[in-house]
Length: 146
Image (tube, rainbow, N blue to C red):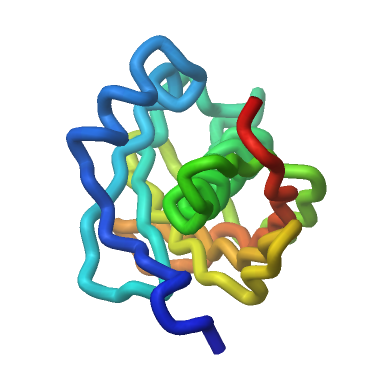
């Protein structure tokens, strides 16, 4: 499915931690998880009170933000040195809801890694129950760095 040498998902957590300082990613407290699977990228986020909707469950926008973040970071890892990615389309299906103090895990899996676009499937699970919370498709555009 992937061109040899094109898909290298070995995450350098020190570089990621430095790059997200002072960003929305840091505000959401998203943590990247090292994994031996080169075809995916994992990240987690704790459900705190500031991520809840008025009914007391995880806000869908927080879930979508996690999904877009993990897919964009994954695309940027795959991109050449002179390229970067940006999310251009997101489609989310919320299956169940996350509860306060649960950790959710987002697993981004590449569907298509083209020259100008990447397509990712991001499944978001409850770490406590194992239930699927959301399934999200993210399309990223790949552009030259300026």
